Image (cartoon, rainbow, N blue to C red; front, top):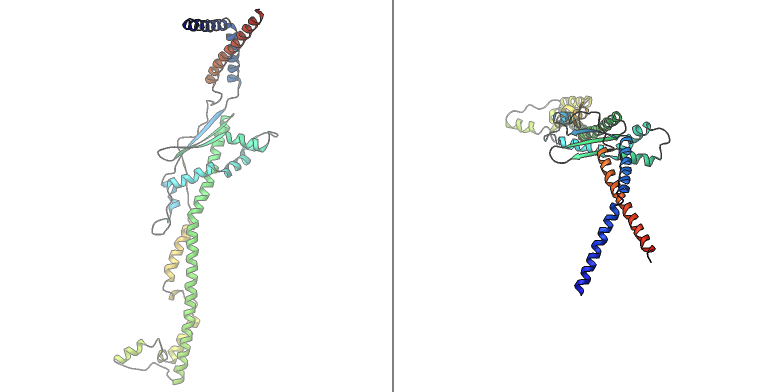
Length: 350
């Protein structure tokens, strides 16, 4: 008994599905018309929509020769760490992605190209941000590309090149500043050392004059004008001590002459032992700061070409999606129409 009821229920469901499919199939003309209509709209959009072109510039890390001037004087002996191609390129990429450069390019290039009354600044900036990309390529050597999208292929190429050039200028300024700043600090530190050595030399000269003046007073008091003539071992021992407590033994003439010479001395530099070495190191770092440098923070990977094939609209994809959407919408309308007709028939039956 139970098996018979299940069999009848199953047969009933099969009949309902078949009736449903038959009912929808009877409306195939409606499905066809809707499909054609939606597909026609998709075709119209695909061919009437304004094309969007994308200009790409591929970039690679600079070569060793491109940054050779940047590493002038930067060796392990001088204590200045050399720049690497990857480090310089990373600084360049940071500027490409930097908000400062985007805002600057937006105000100086993008906004002036628009006609008046194009909309709020925030909306324009959002549109500008969505019109270009900076993408770093994974794996292998350091590479990246900048892509600008626009209605005019020539303008897109021009903007891409201009944006890269602005980022390059900012990156060059940063690496050159970094290259000279450390050397400039070291040169300033050595200048302080030179000043200290000169000041110390001046004080030593003044102290020596005071000591000689005291020795002169002693020599004058005892009437010793010339050093005594003493031979033998005693002479050697005495001579070695004439710079200390026995300085007066040189005699008043020699002491007066030495005092006058010290007072007339214009510069103490030749008599400061460490001064010339410090000045030499200082001049080296000053030369590093003043050196003229030609630096490139990237190199082009290929050439800058104007795009001739639009990236939008993608006509084949739009038409295919329009065909699928039209068929689906036609089937949905046919299903709803069949369900409504079926409901009306059931209500009409007593």
